[in-house]
Amino acid sequence: MRVTNLLFLYLTSWGLCKGSKENTFNKFNLHDGLDTLTTSILSKLDPKVCFAILTDRQYYDILRESIFRSGTESYPVYLVLVSDSDDLLSPNYRTVRMLQEMRRVDCGVYVIYLANGIQMERFFRFGDKYRLLSSHAKYVLLHDYRLFTKNMQKIWKKIINVIFVRQFHPQKRHITSNTTWSWFELTTVPFPTPLKEIFVPKRVDFWQDGHFLRRSRLFEDKTHNLDGQVLRAALLEHVPAITKNFKNENDTNSGATFGGVEVEMIKALSQALNFRIEFYESPQPEIEKWGRYQYNGSFSGLLGEIVSSRTDFALGDFHYTRYHLVLMDLSIPYDTECLTFLTPEILADNSWKTLILPFSSEMWIGVCISLLLVGSIFFILSTSYIYIHDKLITKSSPKKTFCINNLNLQTNAEKNSHLKDGTKDVSTKYEVCFRGKRRQEII
Image (cartoon, rainbow, N blue to C red; front, side, top):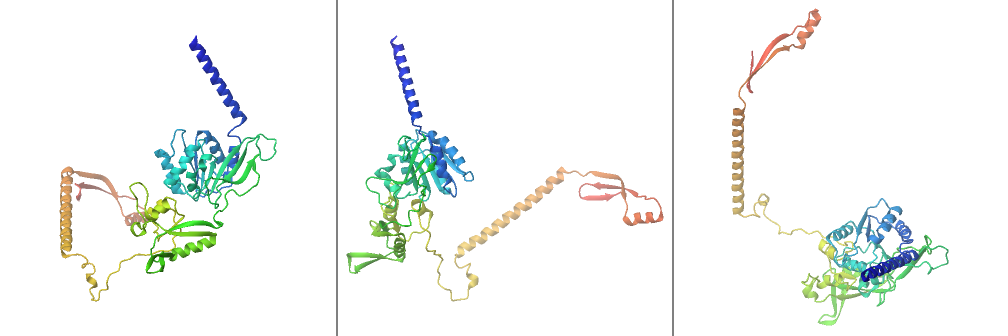
């Protein structure tokens, strides 16, 4: 009886909880209007190459319908479906491969709808660490306070083209309306305003009743005017790109000024984009130089400054290599150098020895012997093959006589003569016999 009562109480409480959840969901539908808003946003964006979507089961149907209703069917779509139990700070192999492919093809629009804000925060930390997220792409995310912590601020200094979608209850509306649709606030990163201890997003627009209220441009160019913001530039002396000059040449502690091609270029860029530049040298520049990979997973030198986000620019005559592209974003090359060999001029006229002189006599003797041996071996093998082949054919093909009876042979001249004389066309009959395969006899 006691067990029956407990079971009845459990079923009753479960039914009440389920009913309360259903009532809450009906009162405030988390998905109400989100599909229409997503369709409106995507229809305004040009992905250039492809769309990249990262979502879970809760938002999967919304994004799938929004993509096809936004009129962007001509672009490929990369879709990553995340499970609720996936740790996106250390995702599985298939997820990593998809992210690498998205980065390789350079998708222009990322749509990330995850109900779990912790997963979204850990995903951005993973993508920033291994450079799987493009800083040039446009991002549409669900608003979550865990994306605005202090540890995430260095990411929002790199990814500035982002829209945070925040949903509000229908009763808390921005303007008076008779509809029951939820309304949304669209915010973004307040770049170029420096990020302080507390992250305060910048409001872009509101969306309700199926349209935008301000009709503002969602993704505007934030880099044309940086409002005098101070940016840091780590340097490594490397003439002629970077030069280091002291006020007193005999005293290295008298204060140094920097010059060179790259310094003048960054100064011209600061004037064009309205920002101030602060130059400094990387730690231990004489020893570490550009830097190297450490056992603890970090980098030293100039690479360590840019990888750890302690600087905004790194100047040091970097070469455009795949190794550097994996670690940082490089500008368009401003100089191309062609490398070649420099040898002393030969005064004597011995051009015929140009091929022989670089190698020793022992090497040339070995080359000649190798050519003779290889030629002899190939000659012996080919001769043996012909001999064996002919012998096998002779044994397997006995001589036989084949005869063709009543073969009509007639030339054109004979045929014309018969027709002119009015006689019948009569052909002579022969018997032709072939004996074996190589001898022919006419009987």
